Image (cartoon, rainbow, N blue to C red; front, top):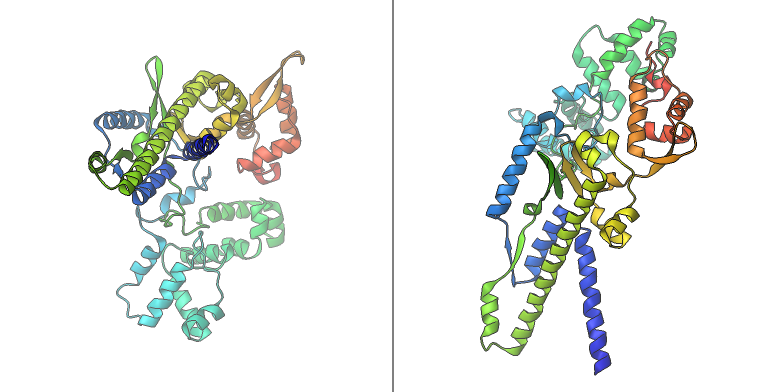
Length: 455
């Protein structure tokens, strides 16, 4: 009997630990889904979606602070963000509007048959994330029992809709369609798109000029016009789940002479035990019912405890980050220190795996933007002092930032090679391989010296 009780207690402890670990590594959105699923499975659960008065005050204070930051409040991780996407300024749909909605709206008022409208809807549904239609005409015709000629007519109608280039089958066709809409006088641009797009992507403007037997200035002018085209017509429309919205789990705010940590617990519902079932337990209800309710209440209590532990661990980690990365929160990315999860674990007197689970999938918001928690645990590289004797650590983020600064300050007609960047960094005491520079440069979407060269 004693052995069975001990085994039962171990199983309960194991389940409790597993549940705690599972909840610890959930981000705010995952925790919200988990709580809602629990409320459907456990009748004793009451969930409170409304924000309490204290949390509302905290939220208002946070929003006021964010509003005061204006341009500084940037998102660090965004989907497909680029530095030179001028073409994005004039494209995209209304907020919440899908590309399919925008396309079908343009077809209203025309006397198309039900079959044609069905084909249009299918094409709109089949577009990839860039807004291209890549299925063949034969497949489209077969699906609706029409000829390939009829399928081609339907597809051509769709290609004539806005945004320009939508429903085309490739980047080349997409850009050619947009050039056609510009009217006469863009023959050079069309020729480059149709014949030398790969060379243009490599910034081989002299080679294009030689092949086309025109001046480099003509190629440069055409290249500038091509860069204004939109290679992704679907960009800016609601993708029905493709676009990623980040909900920070913790916010660090600078108030006068101190930092304050705001846990965004208002983003997920509060769990409570239904009072009617508690009253039922106090009555002389059936033993089977009482056992069932007791088990369900115990489940809720365990979840509440795990959520509370998740919150306290996240709070302690945020405090640790403020201690280690104070200069980052004050002055920005250049001052990010290398921090290993092992060091954070030692500071908080927990296992390294606890830090790893706390960091997983979660985001932190501060005056410099929204960052994944993993961002603060970047690996470091050796930095040598002036006498080449003492060595310290420099975060990869700071090194990447320095590489970007060197490239931004280079002579655009004779840009630095990766080897030259390596030598410049070594002069500053940063020991790094050329291969690592290539890796960091490509991660920042910066072209090689050949691609950056201006003519």
